[in-house]
Image (cartoon, rainbow, N blue to C red; front, side, top):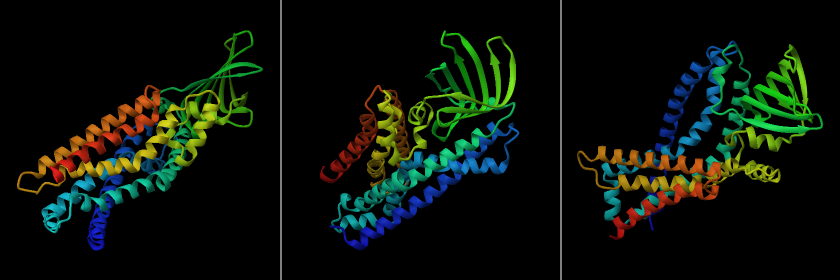
Length: 362
């Protein structure tokens, strides 16, 4: 069994490198995201540099949460390569310590990082992203098209007044706040009664409250209203399933949201995919550590470092592509979300363990 002193030494060295990579990712992500966000939003009258910096800062935790598997991959690679170059792994191996033993502190650290990410960090990231969306929704101007979402969500509601089709270019507060919203109201006879275009729409108790409204009735008469109300029987859980980003809901609330959405007859696949992806994250980070070991454990000779780094980059890229594909399949319902979430973990772990077994036991 590896000694406590050596275990803690490897553990601390690895955590220090993880922190360094983490800080580097935060800085790079902040600069890139702020540049892109400023490009899209600079034409809006309500945009300021301070507001842009705040929105970017609030979005960074979610970006980092997405990038954490690669932080772990490269941190583990650098840690093992550094230990190799200093002959510390050679000495450890000569003392009878197996690869499983000196990888144990790294795997434990990765697992603990994953647990902290899905508990403390995920909750903060979800709250921050919700607030960032609300700030984005507050921006409006003639260049409002700059905030078009990748998809335009629509839903249909029915009340005793008829049917209303609701769409929005941007959503916030888990779908309860709509920006650049459109309400098309149909009467009981199926004819269009009116169209309402609002700067913002908020779902309250039994009604949508619209602000800065342009109303167009069936006769083509247009008028501007400061506020308007549209009766609604929609429950917040239903609207969240249709409009809300799964990333804006913390792990501890996802289970309840999934049950509520399914009680309305909705699939909730996107929420379920997010839920199982978060649960699988600690083991995914452990698997990434094992992947790093496959390209970093050989004795470092002149000219080998480049191939090691390239191998790690390719392994991380392939795993990322697989993760994106299966997550898309899981969110769309083609694959059960639990299978889609754990498939990359199993593949990465199988590859890493197989390599280590071959190297240690022949």
